[in-house]
Length: 299
Image 1 (cartoon, helix red, strand yellow):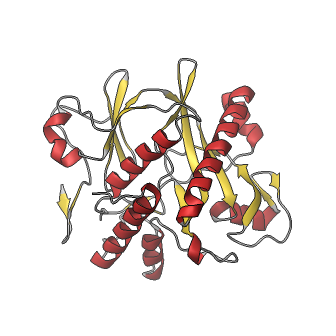
Image 2 (tube, rainbow, N blue to C red):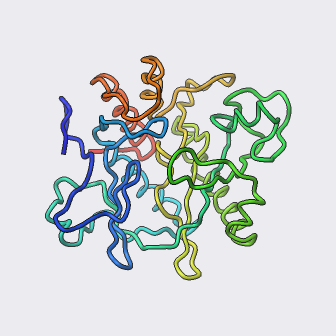
């Protein structure tokens, strides 16, 4: 455990005699046979580098917001969650540290693609459009501005990079990786989840610009897995400040990216420590997104 001047941060999990099957940029995953325990830490990555400074509450926001969306949209597709509170031994002995940041889930065979849906022209999609007039091979109208709303949400799958950036791929390549019927199915489900979530968020003052989903197979059953519509996997923009024609303020780690750009960091590991005001501002953005979307405070 590490501390900031304001609050304790969970940077990494360590349990006697247990090794996580994977440590991602944010999550530590423990294999329990037919189940997995996923622990969302307070680690934060920027430009594909895990920074030495964690963000208090970040892991709890990611977990609790995922649980909220999984439950709200469970009629669209079943998900992998078994419990957001159960902690089997020996994890139960660390309940104080783990409270609010774990999901006990069914273990699936993850599909080898990220299922990205974009409702607005931003990020790598904007760069693609500027260069080609297309978005992952999908022809778009001429003259669109950065952050402009697309005529219809589009499905733009990507590879899953073990390190570095995921790469956008055309739908035909996604179909080659998972088979055409399954690719068609996850495209339809991804678009439906996006439309439902965007319609929920918009009257609450948040624009869901884009998001990514992961799916896995348990036998022949397709499940929605990993995280669900969090500030780490989505672009959430405050609707009151939306102005197409440039980058938008957002409820995520953009606050950190902007700071790192200002100080001229070379984007190579190790990353710099973050000052207290950047930590506090980022924490507030994550908590605010949770409060607005769920209608309650994190605590």
